[in-house]
Image (tube, rainbow, N blue to C red; front, side, top):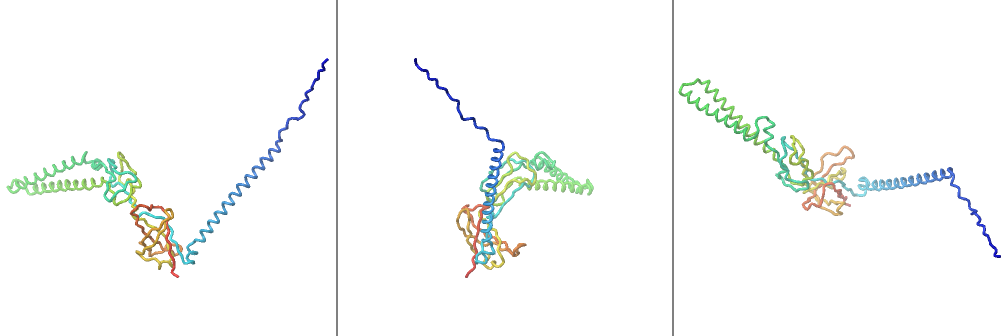
Length: 304
């Protein structure tokens, strides 16, 4: 007889883990929040320390401290020598804009044209310039012929002097109206051709062909950076180290390069605070390396 060995499989003795209590989860969440608060606080403390360090460094470079050391630095931003903001002089539709933003222009370059017919339409005197002038010219010629005929008749004794005088007045009025209108149209037509007053680069363009522009509408901005100007302030104790037309080195931070500048202006009047005097140093920029808005500085040193 074969013995049958029955193996009893014992059920596992490990009991399922009970989920953590809500109270434990709550404490865990509070702990994470506290750690987050500590981390954020530490970040801002370090950030404030860096800011304070930067402020201390800036104070160490203050003009008064440098003045005590026999050095004064003029800091500033480069500005263009000229900026032209061009607007329309008369009302009219824009018929042409032959330039684009970024184009280099010269004095006299046409920036835009307006329809000269709009000048006459606005005045309510006619449909076109030519038609108006033709009508006024005919009126003047007619008045002139009438006067010449009346003059002949007066000499023959056929009309009174008052009639001759009246025809003379009518002729003169017609002449003044014709010549005055022709001059007005010529002047106004010239204003419909919008030109650049100086050289530079088109840095903004506010119109396009087809637009109707009233008088005074912004057309374009022309920025001349053939020269740039460093504007800064100098303490009165340092004025003796600056002379008009004197040459001075100007350092451009972005380019890490030094350029020769010329002192072109020293204000005779101090600004309201600190007894500092505005000065201007001009740099030639024919190569176009310098751009308006770049930071620049130049250093004055007292002789030992």
